Amino acid sequence: MENNHYIPKVARIINIKDEVEGARAVKTFRTQFTIDDGFTHICGQCAMLSVLGKGESMISISSSPIETEYLQFSVLKTGRVTSALHDMIEGDMIGIRGPYGNGFPIDKWTGKNLIFIGGGIGLAPIWSVLQTALGKKSDYGNLTLIYGSRTSKDLVFKEELREIKQEMAVHLSVDNEEDGWEEYVGFVPNNLLDKKPSPENAVAITCGPPIMIKFVIKNLQDLGFKDDHIYTTVENKMKCGIGQCGRCNIGLHYVCKDGPVYSWAELKKLPQEY
Amino acid sequence: MRKLNVYQIYAPVKKESHWSYEALDKPESIRLDHLNTIQSPKMIIFPQREVFFEFHNAEGNTPVMKEPASEPSATVIFGVRPCDAVGVTHQDKVFNGDFKDLYYWKRRNQTILVGLACDTPPSPHCFCLSVGGSPHFTAGFDILMTELEDFYYVESFSKKGDTLINLAGDIFSTPKENSKKDKEKAHSDSEKKLKRHIKNLETVPPKLKNMFDSPLWEEESLSCIQCGICTYLCPTCHCFDISDELDSSSPLSGKRVRTWDNCQFPDFTMHSSGHNPRPDRASRLRQRIMHKFNYFVTNYQAYQCTGCGRCIAKCPVGIDIIEVLEKVRDYGK
Image (cartoon, rainbow over all chains, first blue to last red; front, side):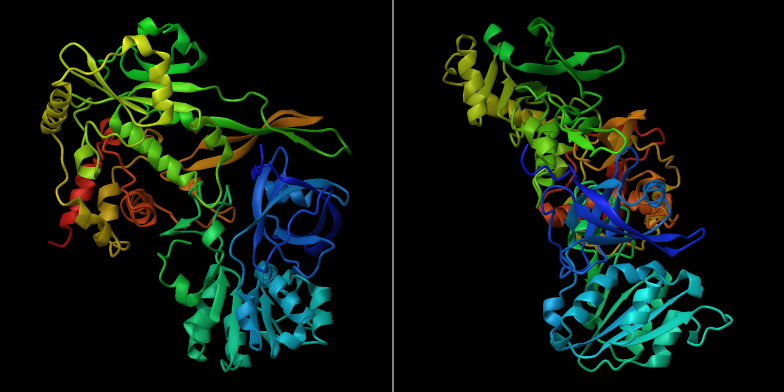
């Protein structure tokens, strides 16, 4: 059967990194396809990861398309498939199908200042854009990251955050006071207001818990960002990835193929069902 | 009839309490006095459970994934009611999107739909005329038969239909002079026998666009017990789940299967975090109505409903989609 997109391609896990420990553990997996070249993706797209015998889970691709050696996925341990992924070791094989979704319209962002606003595991879906922008820095204006989590232990990409500080503005936050924490204390939307990025020639890209996204968008609007200059990604339960199984349906859209990336101008027109 | 042996034939069979499509081994058991079958022929083209692939993985080896070896055979579904054929055309639209569903089309391309026009409504809840169909609607059919005095008037609409008629050539004869007129009269007579109608249904889709937050959904869904029978029996509902079935855990072997799923179930949309975008009965009934009479209408220019009446007939708490649509239509008046 040709082009049977339901049969995943086999990929080997070449690297696993512990990002966050504990009840809301996060691990980052780097994978390489075993036989063919796999696929190329655009920033913001997702892929369906298979653990045979457990099932599939839709995960955003957190590596940049300019990274051709591997695909990277940062996975929060939360259900059957993600728990099985967390039990795997380097060298184990998984299935991958995709890529799915529309991705970020980064071609439209040339020359613009990019402001990334993330919360918790929500840094992963926007990490591919951030890495692409860093890799082609001359194509964009100023780059800023505003990122936070409940505690400093819940921050993902801790090492990478230290490294990119040399190249762009990084403003971190934790929800409550911690010994030795020298950056902002409070929620991400408040840190955003504190740092007051200019809406002039700028695009804001945000992802995190739904409640955070809601207040970030409100605060961005208060700072003067236009609705079509605010981008976010929507998460809904998915099975097929091609708009047929029905469960990620929001109005006329299927998030798996028409999303997951939306400008606020687009998203506010959809029913609030995500 | 022997020449037709190359086909797998399904036809309505009378069971104790209901009619259902069954694979036939002898043509003599065909009857054409059937009422609505409990399930539409959707179950044959888009089965409730189907294997996507089998997988095997011995420790340390590369996993192997293999599609099922058996190929679907050429199939005739005989005696199909016009509403159910419309249902198949709606499924065609969904599975022919940006991505073609190869499993569906493998079966669908080999299926010949032979229809039977309804002279009387096969269910007291039939309302096909209100949703753009009719008791003699031809959409989706390769062949449609209309019962006249002592013979069937047979029309073919496709190459597959022509092939079938040619195979069984000697049982057909050229229609008599008046037959076409008789057929047309039979068709218009059958329309008059329909008891249930929704007036001005065309006003419902635009109205639904502004009824997302309406209290109507809460009111109409209070009695729903979320059994999901309405969508399982619907000839147009296509939502599904994909899951793994294990035959052995060591060495690992099993199957990845697709099964029908149901927007009326709470965990249909529930994230693994526990967050649920459709957290209650109201939001799930709303989805059923919005999808069929708003979203699908915009995306495919058709109601995702064929008026077969199964969801009305079988709902254990008496939720009647006609009444819900009338309430939408009259809401705020």
